Image 1 (cartoon, rainbow, N blue to C red):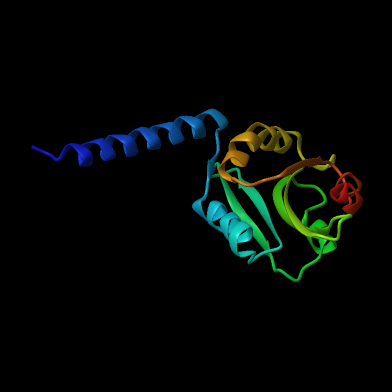
Image 2: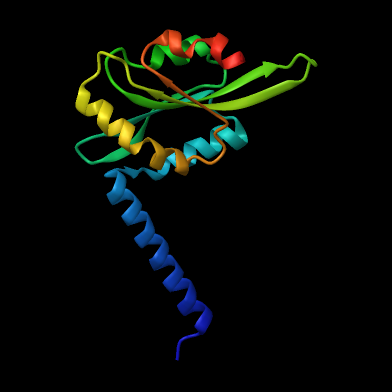
Length: 157
């Protein structure tokens, strides 16, 4: 006879995997483990200033496309987003409050330029909420179709 707690853990893992498969099937997209790992490193260790994520449509998976080093600026981040392709991105924004306190907020950006393919916009839009749920700790969400919609002024407000 198997130990009941081992049996329970095995069933919980199966149920969890089934839930993930159902969620992936609903959005049509899976999330590469590296996405979650790099986001945790950005959030906890501050190893990166930003992360750009890309959907590999052929394999139906969100992957890490670029990691921004801690010394990179918001302009570096903005220029890393392609002019005519959709992307997801997170940016660790440091700022000083009116009370002179150093703070940080993690922004999620859904980037969908007007010049990107309609199918790509649809895929990114339908997968966004599922992907965001994988990244625990996002404080602000921006949806942008051109750089003016995600200017540094918007982030400060």
